[in-house]
Amino acid sequence: VFRKMLEPFITLETLGKHPVSELHEYCQKKGINVTFVRCEWKCGSRVQVWLEGQLMGVGSCNKKEGAKNRAAKAALANLKKSEHIQDEANESQSSY
Image (cartoon, rainbow, N blue to C red; front, side, top):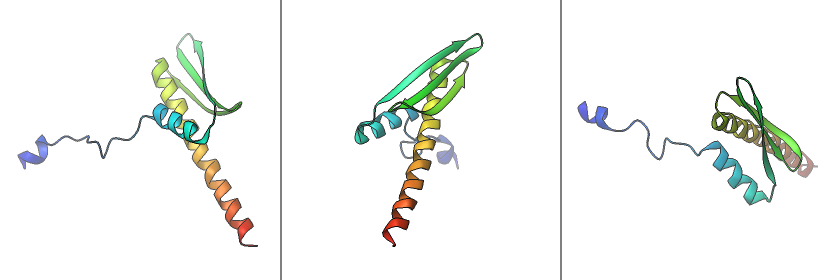
């Protein structure tokens, strides 16, 4: 019982990649230019992620790093969505 309590809750297996790192790695593999644009306001930061001139994610937080992480996470979600749509389109074209 105590051994379970002493084991760490977070391990390398349960720990995911950092969203900004994951986005940079993905874009590097695909040869996509990624740009983070930071917009400040009185209450915190807002960051936009642009890929090849297209807005792919926006994140807001009191701290600039938090906003950047949220923007990267949103961009990754949009990329995965668009890849899923492209995969479905390719499958439907190949079935003709």
